[in-house]
Image (cartoon, rainbow, N blue to C red):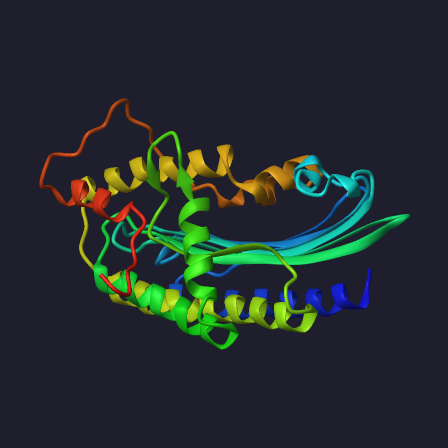
Amino acid sequence: MSASADRVESFLCDLQDALCRALEQLDGGARFVEDAWRRDGGGGGRTRVLKRGALFEQAGVNFSRVEGSPLPPSATAHRPELAGGRFIATGVSLVLHPKNPYVPTTHANVRYFEAGKPGVAPVWWFGGGFDLTPYYPFEEDVVHWHTVARDLCAPFGEEVYPRYKRWCDEYFYLKHRGETRGVGGLFYDDLNEGGFERCFAFTRAVGQGFLDAYLPIAERRRDMPWGERERQFQLYRRGRYVEFNLVYDRGTLFGLQSGGRIESILMSLPPLVRFEYDYRPQPGSPEARLAEYLKPRDWLRD
């Protein structure tokens, strides 16, 4: 492993620890259980899962580092010259599935990738972001979420937030449904502009900024009363989460193609979900209102 990858791995392990401490405190009723694992061919990770908590029905925070050869097809699609080369991929990802339907599901990820091949210049890049998936959205929550995203991007240039906000809207879009997965946030990939230190600093800002974005929303909504109607709608909408992760998500595809650990790769899926044929919410209902939020818009100007 290169010295750069060592530095990133150290940060990611510390980030996983900090996220788990904060989320255990937020939940207040359960703790993460760690499952350390090794990968045949090189690397391994620490999968941490919290189940049946006071707030979270299931929460997962993963650290992984995989390496080896050859690169999976998903990694060489845009860099065919690296086909057959060696790679290092390391990252932290989390997915939180609260039980209360008024508390949004959320996802965050920061990652680093290196690849090399004899006779070809080695390459590296960072990627990551965070996004929010409410079932009963509140505009003040969405504005807060995007305000944190904008502010953490600001030191890196005024064009950064609009660029990565738009990329998030485009990436987390279910083409077959004609809707976004949620209300967006930030998404970036293949980041190597401005040198390693700048890219690493931005990735640290994203990873460390997630809690500032999510915790106030969860605290604000966690005690809202809900019933069977809200629960059934939440389970139905979780189906969209499953559809995206299994059809479009690059991380899931890379994990499967690189021989990753299946339990850790699919940790992002909700513990309970339902599908219903041709479901249509009653016009004017709170459930129908969600559709207004599943279209890209500028939340900080509208």
